[in-house]
Amino acid sequence: MRTDAAIAANRFGLGARPADLQKVDRNPQAWLLDQLQGPSRQPGELRSLPDTADVLVEMQDLRRERRDMRNATEAALAPDIVKAYGRTIRRHYLDQSEARYRLAARSDYPFFERLVHFWSNHFAVSADKQPMPALAGLYENEAIRPNVTANFADLLIACEQHPAMILYLDNQRSVGPGSRLGRRANRARREREVGLNENLAREILELHTLGVHGGYTQGDVTTFAKVITGWSIGGAGENARFAEGEPGHFEFRDAIHEPGAHEVLGQHYPQKGIAQGEAVLRDLAAHPSTARCIATKLARHFVADEPPQALIDELTASYLESGGELTSVYETLVGAKAAWAAPLSKYKTPHDFVISTFRAFDHVPDSTRFVVGALDLMGQTPFRPGSPAGWPDTADHWGGADALYKRIEWSNTVSRVVGSRINPVELGDAVLGPTLSAESRKAVSRAESNVQGMTLLLASPDFQRR
Image: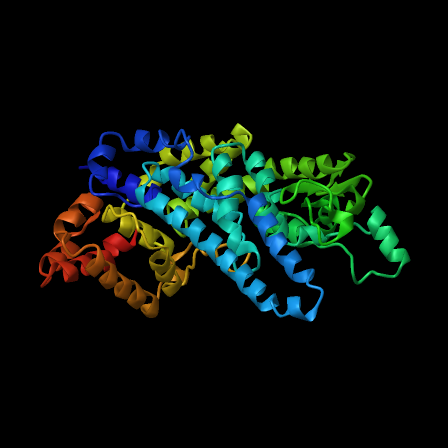
């Protein structure tokens, strides 16, 4: 068996299942490229989930029910409604987490799934802000998943116009000072109640497209924020002014949009309404700084914390030559010699470690709390990176003695629950192939029990890296 098979399954994929390497070994690159379009039908794990609009309407109804209580008797029931709101949020969060990790554990398209997770982290929203726990998984499925192999501009627009992103970065509160509503508020001296919010504009420039050193200025941030005023959500019924639009869906509100032509990064944008913001996004997607930012992140994620400059240059050129067609960039990545270099150089995040463990056991977890609890223990709670920057993708964040102890502790637990009847040496050979070192194999083979041997295998440097 070639090392390339183990690299394809573990570096590009989500970890090998026991029978995977034999299949992958026939042609590792073709195995990866064949996955790029993903499954022909929506996976069953996702079909049972509601859509974002339904969840937002449900949340709005609960808030309205509490707000409309008119007397002391009704007000006494308010704590029950607050609890119901919390339970509903938690139920949606657990359902979406379960769907994500069950799918990752069983998927026959692990390269495609890794790309979904990569872009979900690039365009991160975090479930530590309400009502994001009930939306983050739906955002991944609705904005990210359908556009993983599209043009980057289409992926970018889908993410920025999704209600989860709008709510997470408060763009529904952003009011152009020269808009109809902004002018009325200023005349009434209500400047503190309405105003421009730069959050979404800043994160698009800094994190989603050009990058921190991409050549934009604070003036570009402010102007771009004006361009995307009015990007909101329909049916915000708490305020009669914003009751129009399909509830829970993206809605452009002309009343709060800053009118007129604007200049961003030296480009003039005379378009009106929503077309103006989309024009800026498409130009940002085509910018050389965006190409380099995306190329660097892909190379860092798939190859090394400090990826070869030649690989970054190759991916950047592929992005620019194809006009941002992501499939072309992935094909360049898979075809790059540096991407197949051994040994495996990426230290697994807790997310990768947990998924690859379940795949090694060929086990689909049936307890959401077991998965969420494991990732919480190891510091990577599902859908909760804590900031728009997403989770770190380098070993210096995930290493350390305490972090390793927690991984060993969980390895021992999952080995007792799932792996006690599996021969750890045979499993190591099956899922790691030639990348299982002689030293690790010897240590596992000398274990006093299957549980101890499995714990040693999961905690070994060979399994901890991809």
